[in-house]
Length: 225
Image (cartoon, rainbow, N blue to C red):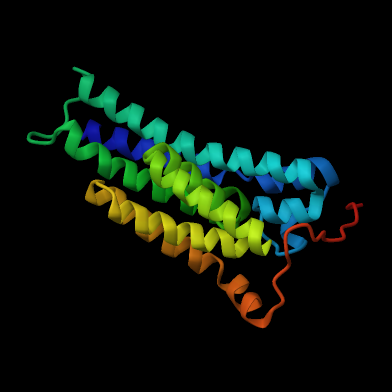
């Protein structure tokens, strides 16, 4: 029982890392605003970039990415500790090589969901692209790098961050299925990618209508009284 309780604690830690409201805090600290009331109403780095400027946007992007990395590293470290510990015995027949990929899969999903459904923001948040990239990089760096390259290329050509995020998610799904990875990793990337695309459904409507803002467009904001 202690083994499963410890894993639940690790899962909760992954969720709370993802749920840390970086963009919301940036809005409050820098402008005294609720970023959810401006621009796309997302707490993600793109809305921070458009609303607060380049430096805050890049800072939020990097921190959100590191949240995903940290969630995976915490759970991987926890798994290593649990199987090395004499105080907490895993269930009979369960080995570290079998369990760790499943624990990573659950932790990655928890971090991605936490970013978009933060407990600190009434279960609102961002669109999980940056946190998801952090998860990919910590889980499988070739998949993460491939997704990042796809994102950069799409944004460089079309200057549409939402399109880059969605195509990066599809690229990651293709890479994780094409390269040798355990089943839990494939399930995580495919499910996480579909979730990220679903979170962009309003962007898809704007893309179809030709109304999606391009990179570099700013959102006017007045400081809260």
